[in-house]
Length: 337
Picture 1 (cartoon, rainbow, N blue to C red):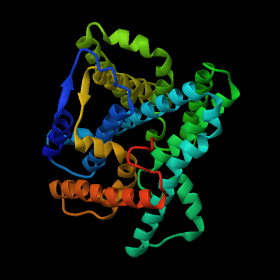
Picture 2 (picture 1 turned 30 degrees about the horizontal axis):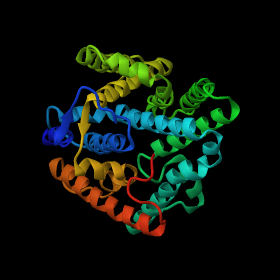
Picture 3 (picture 1 turned 90 degrees about the horizontal axis):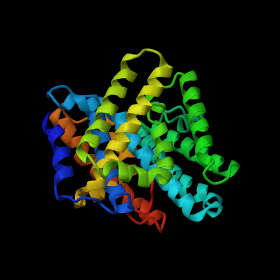
Picture 4 (picture 1 turned 180 degrees about the vertical axis):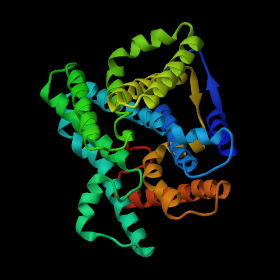
């Protein structure tokens, strides 16, 4: 199984470049590449939770919330950049342009999983389908979808209620309330231990130059410092039993990991067709991984892992093509999540 621990590294380093400063480290293309890499890490994370064997590979079973934090960071950065550029005009079309592009594929995925349930002969409780869709009980691992929709709504409401640069404080308040509600409802900790990386992404628009200046000297030391802080705070968050401290420490650890990731992209560039494909289809990969991770399990360990990745990518390609033809204008890479 350790083979699957090496493959992501090979994928990332293939055709990797290095420079004193990558001018386009936050461009759509570069961000898409990183999200593509993170999407396959998420799949491997869920595979690692369901397999045995290997020395390094089991560690992937514990990194999911860190990787999700990177998605939240890029999402927060993306919406804030657009808001800074377009102002109130962006908010007027926000739900149609941003939220609906998350909701629509999610609804399609729910239909696919319901059909799969019917084919497999499993009992479907039709009277609570809407409730299950909203709560993310039909599509495996869809808590992320519900969370990102909530975070987008918090962003929109914060921008509507405040003037420019005052929205960050309201976003922090909104996310804090969201985290408390999750804890009060007894939801698994993945619902809230990465949420603050979204506001970090929003804030990064305003601290971008300072962050670049920070990493301009003592680069390797500061990069390793970010990684060390991520590990320290995550470990503290996992060993402390109180939910409040878990939420605080884990979120600080995730934000440190996001800054580590951003620091890496400031000097390293990653260009290869596989990462590009993964990045263009990162949302579909997340939505449909459950088919082979949880529903149709083929073989054990290595066979299961290999079949899951290969078959998932095939299904993702098919679903993306269907989506493009049903909804014209959804060219590859155009949608951002």
